[in-house]
Every structure is written in C-alpha cells, then in structure tokens.
Length: 316
Image 1: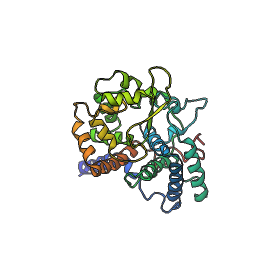
Image 2 (image 1 turned 90 degrees about the horizontal axis):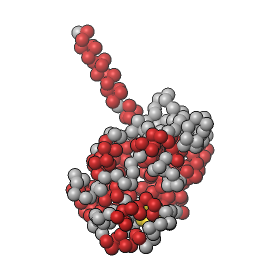
Image 3 (image 1 turned 180 degrees about the vertical axis):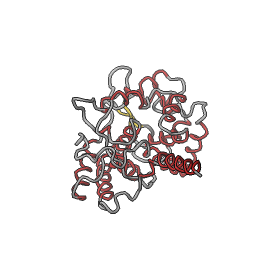
Image 4 (image 1 turned 90 degrees about the vertical axis):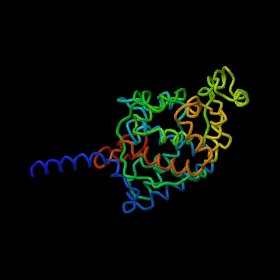
C-alpha cells in the first residue's frame, strides 16, 4: 500500500511538472481585466493598418522572445549595468522592431485595467495572434498567464536564435531544442508569408546559391548590390502584406529568399509538407495556429515566478 501511495505521489509530481505550461489559460484575464484583450486588438489593428509590415514585426517579437529562455518578455528589456539587451544579439540587431507599439499597448492595457496586471510576455503573445488575423491569417485561443523575466541574455540569444544561413539539419535541431518538431518548423517558418528581409541577410544566397531560380535571383539583385545597400528590403513572397500560402509556393519554385527558407524544400524530409502547404491553405492555417500555441508554451514563468512589469523595457 505504501508503495502504491509513493507511486501515486511520484506520478502526481511528474504530472504537475509536465503540465506547467497548461497553467496558462485563454481565460486568465476574463475576471481580472476583461477589457485587456480588446484593448490589445484595437492598437494592433491600428498599427498594422498604418504600416502593414508591423504585423510581421510583432509576430517576430513573440517568436524571438520565446526562443530565448522561454516566452518571458526578456527581449523587451533594455541593457542595464548587469546584462546586455537581447536586442543586440546577431539575430535581432537592427532587425527586431515594434517596441513602440508594445509600449503603446502596455500603457493602454494598464489604463483600462487600472493597474499593471497584464504581463509584457502575454502582450507579445496576443499581439502576434492579432497581427496574423489583421493580415488575413488564422486565429487561435492564446493561452495566458505568463509572467515577465527580470533579466535577459544576449549571449543565450546569440546561441539559440535560428540563423538565416542554417541548413535543414541545423534548423531541425534548433527547433527540437525548443521542444518543437519538423511540422512546427515548417508551419512556423510560414510566418515568412508576411514581412521583409534585409539585403545583408540574403545577399549570399542571391549571388552564390545554386538551388535558386535564376530569374528570381536576378530580380532580387536589382535592389541588393554585391556591396552596400545592406538595409534594402525585399519581401519574403510576392504578397508580403497578406497571410497566405505564397511563401510555400515560392519554395517549390526555388524562390526562397533566405537559405533557411529554401532549406525546407531542397530534397529533404520537409519537402512533402512544404508541397502540402503550397496546395492546401487550410492545412497550413490549422497547423500554424497549433504550432503558435505550442511555441507560446515554451518555458513560461507562472505563479510567483517573475513579475508583472510596469514598463516592458525595464524590470520593476
């Protein structure tokens, strides 16, 4: 009997640990501040209406936050005397943007709630979803209740953020380290159906790659010279302001903008899924929503861990 009790206790402890992420709930703010989510949505819609590219930028903030020690708002922290901001990491420097919109959301949410009750980490998660919806993408129920970190790590960000030059095995391993599988990798990469990249990031591919459509390479070279123009922008696909399947259709035609994009359709294990998504918008939309929920569950701070920041840019 004692051994059974011990077994049940260990099982309970294991289950409690295994379901930490599930302490997040779409209804977390329903009683505390029901006005919070509508307030976020209103500001995101206005920001995306003003500049369509902002939708992709806000989606990317959530992604780059979650990959560095979990979805804890650490990306939003500015440098202090004790740590350097993740904004300076290789995958973020002169690239991540939208911080002013996050500040605007935080101020408005705290105003309608009467005090700081919504975390910056949750703001990123909701703003990502609302951005996708604003550009014609799927919706999903964002699980909420994350708390904010009090520190950040540029070193960790440098080590774990996926690089635009990664091949398929490196990408698979990178996502696996976050608890994400190959389907998540392909679906989440489909976030590149919206937004732009900078010439300095894709220059090597358009001048040196062999797995690229020559006409596409020529088109991209027109605004991305061999030297200079590092910040010149190019869309990931022809419909950069619309959430659709053009990104995957491009990959099938060898028109992926980044090396890491085309790696998903280059004779490897993810080719079949890319082809499926290119032909089946519903399959892509459904999987993207599922993978966004899964990514949003990476190592959240809950309960009494972390804090609810007063300003998203600094710890309390």
